[in-house]
Length: 387
Image (tube, rainbow, N blue to C red):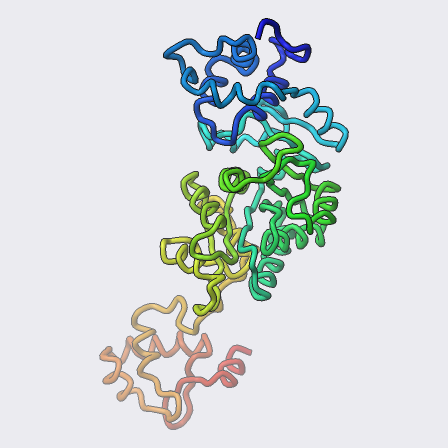
């Protein structure tokens, strides 16, 4: 190639990153290393000039797979397409660029194509990744809705893959309660896949955002679905799996989250349900058991944080009792009063210790005395003693 195309600008890193996203497939580590070490515009200029990286430099053995797409390369056309649909391109350093994508290291995207009114950076700061099976059950969808509503009420955003099943249920539930939701796609953000989600995509764009690392017009492929799962995991501070088959894309997302050091939770299901086999596998491998949104919040909270919105465990009658009082309480019968001497013998304690213990237990409404001796209080009598 003797001259650069009209759209090329050696000082325009943003457009160069858009071009690289067209030339490469997600997780092209060689291209990422070359771009990050030498700059997106400089490396693109080398490629356009026909030189490319010198022999022995990173990327020198991979020229063929990039140059095969040069003939149709026009990032300004892609950017116009994005702009015409109300979208924007994000690159590292932009205000809305999610900082946690750096956790992906060399697998981080070169840029993100975004469509929608939501702030992606803000969404990722308090993102809950909620994913699950496409072939979901009524049980799974009901649990997903409840989890999403509880998370949105606590100020969290919902990240998912915009697929049929649990993903779609999660997005719809977030929208129903005016929550912020992010759909991560394996195709261009100007496309609708699956086709049945055209209305859902339109609603997500109104308040949330659709995100992809591949340019407009790109079709979904199996490889792109697999690789987009790392983005879903990175955009959520925790990952919750509602339903998943033993081998599935959902399990890949859970594995990606664990490798990033993110907490992973799983919702248990019927042991006979193939849709929950993946969840049970995750639970066996150490995932947190999730039954409500409060437990999701526990995973999100820093160690030692106040979890005041979590319901306290019901108090037991023996909570806070010293050892001697527990022994005396065990010795006091429920159905028939017993004399002090019998209690001392049964508890194996001196009479002075037992008398003091009985006084404390009576104040708590756990025992009472009548003319025949000491007896444990039933629930009704305990309430009466406390009043």
